[in-house]
Image 1: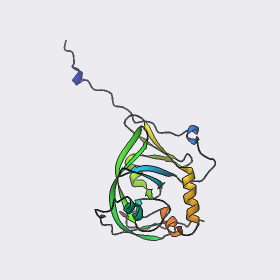
Image 2: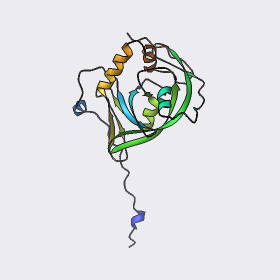
Image 3: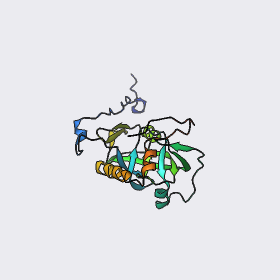
Image 4: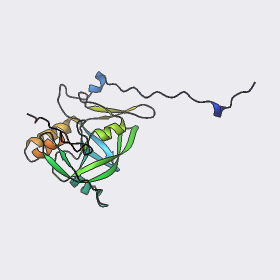
Length: 204
């Protein structure tokens, strides 16, 4: 009788981690709330805060001033001949595009992807906006009530918690008037691949 070698044996495929949210995910939050999800991420080896997670945005957006402060734009930006639109229809010309590595993590679980950012040269409340392209690549599941996003890793489910107080500070800053046009812009944007502007209602 022939005994199969260990190399011939194959392990059963592992199932993807089940991503779910429970009442425990409310720990540390002030509820009820209507805050947006604002997180910290490692981007190009920098610890970057005030990042808005916007599931309604079809692009990832980066602030040119923040890019210059991090000295990441010295090699030049890629061409980007399109505009993006906000919730109130405000058009913003994109200065260029840049690819940056993003690490989503709550130690010790993490996941790194490469993301393309549309760079804009206007003042707005957040340092960057993570839209659907990055969320799709990291396979993230976002829960606004829990102010948290979860994503699968090779072993378990990783997560990134929102910064509720920072989100409220950003909201207050946007109400002061200086960032109002940009705040309208951050709520949503046009998909440059479609080249078709979507008409949306204005926030009250």
